[in-house]
Length: 135
Image (cartoon, rainbow, N blue to C red; front, side, top):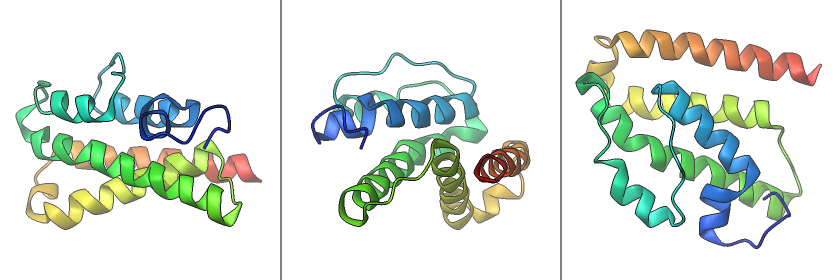
């Protein structure tokens, strides 16, 4: 995706500079910092052991899968369609997809979660920044 390394899963999903930017965003949403593991499967194994607020546990569990889905989709767009999206656009697309996944799977949970209101505000700010960056 970054055209610096090989198209290996661990590079694409964890160590590519584009992926790193996306992981930093995701971890910032939860107020965390993380030293990235070498293997994606190790990250998934450790992910469940991280302590997050009880009301965020369900959202936390789906977060790495949603990000991996977004990164893989972007990799496919770049490889097969020749279309490179900017980092702000990638962040916007990921946040909207992540919110959709949370809302779809935990809709009864979203209404009662303070985090989700903050999350909507974050999506708005990132979206606004992404589209101001384009013009």
